Length: 256
Image (cartoon, rainbow, N blue to C red; front, side, top):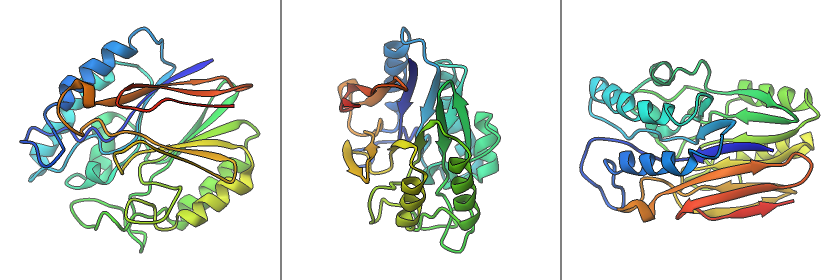
C-alpha cells in the first residue's frame, strides 16, 4: 500500500482576501493538514500547483514562497511540486523550482509497482515558458517536446501510472490545457494510465474518460475557516483500488 498526501491551489500570500480567496489563512489550513496527515506515514507528498499567489515584486514573491515552503516541507521528506500559473506569475520557473528544491518541472519516478508522472502545462501556445507576467492564464499548453517525452515515458513502463497536473486534462475550456485532446490521446494509447489528479478550477470534480479517472481537487485557499479547506490522503493498492480520503471540503472517491 502506498500513501500519498495531496493538496492544491494553496495560493499563499500575505495579503487581504479577494472574493472567495483567503490567502493568509492558508498557513492555518496547512497546519491543519499537517496535523491530520501526521499519522499516515506518507510515502510522498504532492502539491498540484498554485502554491503561492501573485506578488507585485520578485522580492515579495520569494518571501511568500519561503514562508509557505517551510511548513509544507515539514510534512514529508519526499515532496513533489506541480507548477501552477500563479507559481510563475512573478517568478521564473527556475526561481520557483530553486525555492522548493526541485530540479525539473516535469519528470517521472517509480514507487514499488507504481509509476508516477508530474506534468508542466505552464507554456504559451508558441512554446514560451510562463514567467514574469508574460502570459494569459487561459493559454496553457503542453509543448511538443514534453508530449514526445510523455509518450516515450509511458511506453517505457508496464507499471500502472498516475499523472499529476495543474491545469485540467479532462475537458476543454478556460481551465483546461489547450491541447488536452492530444494529451489524452497519449494517455489512452499508453494503456497503463490509471488516474489523473489535477487542480486549477478550485472545486471538486470527477469524470471518467476512456477508462481513465480524472479527479479535480478542491482548492485550499477557497473560503474562510478550516472547515472550508481541502486536502487528501491517496491510498494505492496496485492490485486493487485507488482510495481518496478527503479532509474538510475535499470529496472522497474509491475506484477499483
